[in-house]
Image (cartoon, rainbow over all chains, first blue to last red; front, top):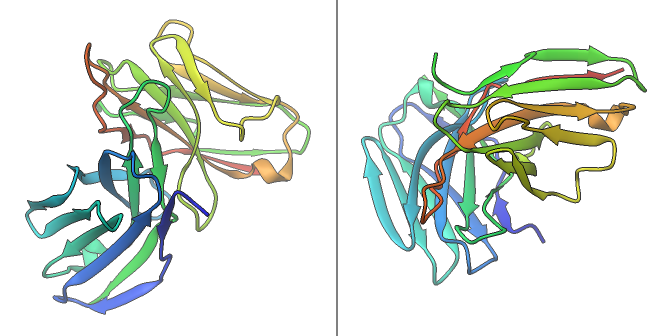
Length: 113
Length: 117
C-alpha cells in the first residue's frame, strides 16, 4: 500500500463547476499536506499547504485536511480552462531523517470550456 | 529568473552510456532534493542534501546513481550505464531549513526528461 493514495482520474468537468480532488494517507505522523499543480511536461508548482487538520482558502482554491480520517481534499471554485492540469497531493514530515515530500500519483483534470 | 534551474531539459542517450544532470537551486535555499517521475505517477524521492551533505538516499537510488553538491550550491545527478528503465523525468527541488525547523515549501525546477534508447 502506498503511503499516499490518489485517484488518477482523468476527471473532466465543465467550466464554472466546483472541482473536488481527494487523497488519503496512511502515516499518522505526517504533519503538512501540500497541493501541487503540474502542467504537461513542466515541473510541479506549489499551490498551497496546510498544517494539521482544518481548512485553508486561497482565492478559488480551498484545501481541507481531516487527520482523524486521514483524508486530504482540494476544492476549486469557478473552474477555468487554465486549471486543466495534473494535481498532486503530497505529505511532509518535519522530523530529522525523514524530511521529504511523499506524493500521490496525481489526478489529471480537464476543464471543458 | 530566480527559480530552480535544471539542465539539460531533454536528454536522449543510448543504453549503457553515462549521463549527468545539473540543478541550480534558489540561491538562499540550503536544502536540495532530487525526485524521479515516470508517466502517470507522482514524483518519487531519490535523495536530498543539506548544504553539501547528502543526508538521505532512497533505496530507488541504485549503485549506478550518484549525486553531489560539492559547494552547497548547485548539484549534479549522474547515472552510469543507463538502462531503458531509467527513462523518466528527473526533478530537482529546493527549500529552506531554518535553525529550528524545516519549511515544507519545496520549489521544483522544470525537470530533465531522460530517454534511454
